[in-house]
Structures are given as structure tokens and as C-alpha cells.
Amino acid sequence: MSDVFDALVAEYPAWWIDFLGEHNHVGGAATTRWLLERSGLRPGSRMLDCGAFVGASARLAATETGAAAVATDLNADFLAAGRAMPGGEGVAWVTATTAKLPFRDRTFASVWSVDSSIAPREMTRVAASTATVCLCCEVPADGRGGVEAFIEEWTSLGWEMRSHRSLSLDALQAWRNAEAAMVAHRAKYEARYGKRGYLAQLDLLAMLVESYERGAAGHGLFIFGRG
Ligand SMILES: C[S@@+](CC[C@H](N)C(=O)[O-])C[C@H]1O[C@@H](n2cnc3c(N)ncnc32)[C@H](O)[C@@H]1O
Image (cartoon, rainbow, N blue to C red):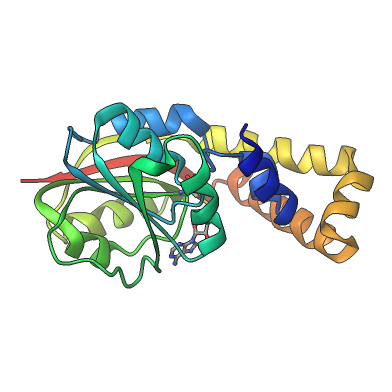
């Protein structure tokens, strides 16, 4: 891990940074590679990493495929750290919300949101006529049509689903591991998050574990394509 990332971790006490790390999503770098292999990215094609954090996906895409990657996030500090990390010079860094992207219509060959906020209409607007959308996200998995409704939202915007992989068990394991580590090392995490922050983050994790165990929530990878 780079010194720059370590400095960011020290400055931002948050369970998701502590337990998910640089590739800050369920499945880590293996998830990023799964998406990358199916993204259709080629040298020079434009990739948008929405809610990029330190841009692990954007930097990997730029380095491995030669794509012209752009990383956006609400938090300028995360982007500044990403820019200073390996491969950061090959990415453009733009502070923006995914709900309103400062880019022209139909300009990206691949639009990503990896365990971040998803704005289907806005992401569709900036995607080229021949493009992919690459997602790692929580999906409703309540057995009452939640995943189908999620997929239908994208198909109604002109996309077809090309690949899907469930990560629900991986996510459940990740939340359980984080919850267990926070309990086992309470003193360490109380010192890091503060007493109230510790309890708030533990509550959140307990709620996540409970909803995944109940089957009310799941996690998945999705590749949508058009053209
Ligand atoms: C769990 S991290 C995932 C980061 C990154 N996609 C990855 O996989 O490594 C979520 C990130 O999304 C960003 N974020 C949350 N809501 C956002 C929004 N509406 N627009 C842009 N970024 C957002 C947060 O600041 C945070 O950096």
C-alpha cells in the first residue's frame, strides 16, 4: 500500500476504508478485474469511474488497457490522493456528483459505478452509443422481484444485460468479518472512530449483516451493453 493511501487512511477514520482498502468494494481487485475484462475498453477509449474514491478502477483500466480514464467523486481529497498514487498521472480527476456529471452526452465507451451511488439516467446520458456500463452494487434480493426490477430499470434505458455475477455471499462474509474485527479490537476502533462513532459504525455493520442473512439485500456485478 502506498504512503499516500496510508496518509489518507489516517485522516479518514471510516470502517469502509479500513476493511475494504484501496479497491474499495466487495471482492477487491478481483472484482475490478472481472469488470475490466468485460468492459470492452481498448487503448484510447474513454472510461468514466463514478464515485471513484482513490480511483483504483480508473488507474487499473488506464494502466492495463490504455483507456483514457476519468475518475469522479464528491470528495476532492480522495481524488487528490488517487492522483498521487501509482498510475494516477494517467487519469483525469474531476470533483463531481454522479447525479450531475459535468460531461457531454454520449462521450464515454464505458461508465462504471463500483460500490458507489448509481444514477442510471445520468450514467446513460454520458455513455456512447456503443458502450458498456459496469456495476458492482447492492441489489434488493428479497425474492419478490428486486433484482429483476433493477435489471428492468437499465433495459428500459436501452441497455441489455451481458454478464452478471452474484457477490451476495462474498458481501455477507465481508460485513461479518468487519463486524467481528471491530468487536474483537474494540479499544483500537473506539480510539480511531470515537465512542459514538464506533457504536454507529458497528450498528451499521450489524444491520448490513442482518439484512444479508435475511436475504433482503444482496450484492452483484453487472455488465450492461448497447450498440
Ligand atoms: C465505497 S467507496 C467506493 C469507491 C470506488 N468506486 C472503489 O470501488 O474503490 C464509495 C465512494 O463513492 C463516493 N460517492 C458517494 N456518493 C457519491 C455521489 N453521489 N457522487 C459521487 N461520488 C459519490 C464516496 O465519496 C466514496 O469515495
